[in-house]
Length: 127
Image 1 (cartoon, one colour):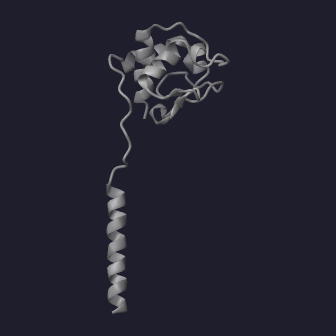
Image 2: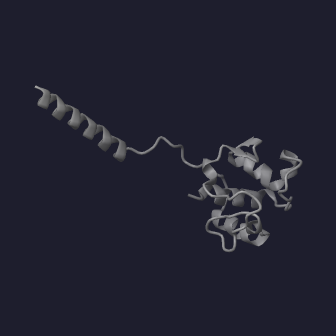
Image 3: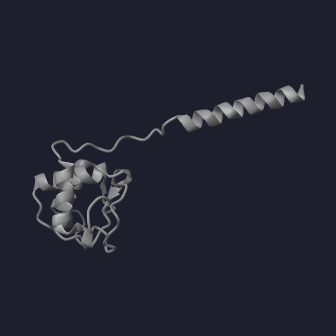
């Protein structure tokens, strides 16, 4: 009888482990940025010199250590510790960071709304 219980327990544990390994995590997909062009966003990140301050995966020369690395952007909860991380707020931040956080070291690069949308589309697409 003990042997039967041990076998049943082993089978149950095996099923639970198998289920845990084959299921996908309940993570929401990255926010979409309507009208944003991620390829153009990567080009803008390079042209604007964002990589002089930030590590940005997939952008040549983007290995700066002044600002935070922009890896796994879609997993972040907040922008500059102030705004919930979503497309609208990221576009706002990129266009005028001082309006969100007056003492930030992030420079205002005077990007247009379209440029900010493209950059946001790239950042939210980083895996």
